[in-house]
Length: 226
Ligand SMILES: *Cc1c(COP(=O)(O)O)cnc(C)c1O
Image 1 (spheres, rainbow, N blue to C red):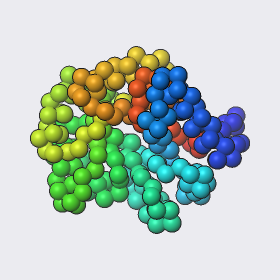
Image 2 (cartoon, helix red, strand yellow):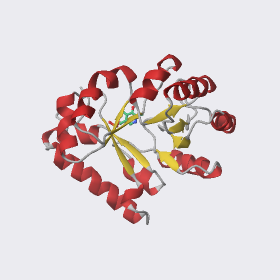
Image 3 (cartoon, helix red, strand yellow):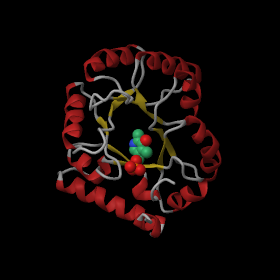
Image 4 (tube, rainbow, N blue to C red):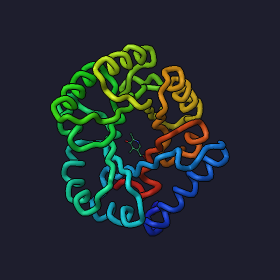
């Protein structure tokens, strides 16, 4: 079945998502500009991305360092002012490339990565803001730090002078995400963190009502990934 989103012009899809963000923020008594829309462009070509840039979108997300390296240098050269966020898991041996490419990293989730990122940032002379990813549903094979390990990981990141700006989660698939968003919001508040990176195409309005500051939206903007 054809995804309806693919039939609409990119500018129409972007305007629709932005209107939905503004609406959810208004219901929650929050300002629409308190929510950053990250357009997750993983698997999509530069040709698919360009129309969204033309329509005004400036913040994009990728989940692989190598894919971002292949796609984004040319796009960024042509369109200054773009911010690129890493939303996927990061291997420690790619920390240098990640720090060079990305303006924000959403997947800090273990002590070894704290060390690798601190070293990479020192080397590059550039501090890249990070979200600590939390395995909010305590799922076996999912990335993210266990809730019980969060205080220690945050202490390590602070000791290493990593700029941690918030928490990030991807709730378990197929069940109501709201309780997980509410839990991430509480954990962030407990630790005095402003940022909450939560909510994707199917649930970003719920996430905004529960405090999301960054929503990561792919298929609602680009259509389903092939
Ligand atoms: C792909 C991805 C998204 C976007 O998902 P959609 O359902 O297409 O909006 C958000 N966050 C992460 C971590 C992703 O990998």
